Image (cartoon, rainbow, N blue to C red; front, top):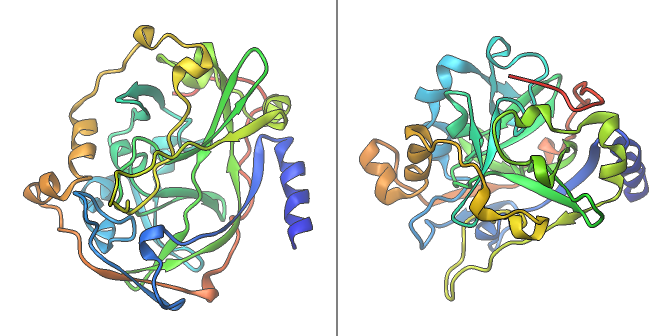
Length: 305
C-alpha cells in the first residue's frame, strides 16, 4: 500500500498535486480508548477543532452562500454555490490574497463567507466538488507549505487535509488518502492584489513542485499549555528575501476582525456563539476513504476574480 501511495505522489506532482495519506488524531483528543476519546475544554481561551459548535455557529453566514450535504464518507459538510465561486474554484487560490500580520500568513478572502471557511475547518475535493469540513479552532490560514531552496525562491501552499468528519453531530476520525492542489508563487509575487494572476498551478508548477520541500514550523506552546489544534505557520518573509516593512497590507475589515473574535470563547460567547464543551472524538473505520478525482487546473499562471 505504501508503494502505491508513493507512486501516486510522483504522478500527481506533475500536475501540481501530491497524494497525502493522513492517519492522525488531534493531540487534545488522545486518551485511553481508541474508540471513544474524550476531548476536554481547552485550558486556554480557545476551542478544540472538534467542538460540536462548529456545526452551528457558522450556519447563519454560510447558509445563503452554499449547500449543506451529508457525504457518505465525510459526513456533514458545506459546499459553496458554484454561481458565486465558478467552476474553477480552489480554496486559498480563488478570490483572495495573502497578508502577513503578527508573525503569521493570513488569507484575506474576497467572499462574504470567506472569513469562516479560510480561518476555520478544512477543505477537501470529493465527488467533483470542494467540501468544507466544519472545525472550531481559528487559524490565519489552514494550509500546508512547501518552498524551494534555489533562486528564484517559490513558496507553495495547499489546503490542509482534515483528520475528522462529522456523524450524528459528533466528530469522527478520518483516515484519508487524498490529494492536495498546490499553488506556487515567486517570492516577489506573493503579496498584493491580483495574486491569482501570478500563481503557478497544473503542469506549469511541475518543476517547482518536484524541487520543493515541505516547510514545517509549528511554534511550541507556552510552558504547561496543551494546544487544541496545531497551527501551521509559514516561513518568515525575510527567509524568502522579502522586506516585511514593504508588504502591502489589504484592509482588515469587520469580517476578519469577527473571525478572530469567534476563535476565543471570551469574545465569541458574547456575540452569540456557543461556549466550548467537553465532547467525544470517535473512531469510525467505516469512514476511511479517499478524496476522489482532481479538479481541472490550468497549466499557466492565470487570472481569476
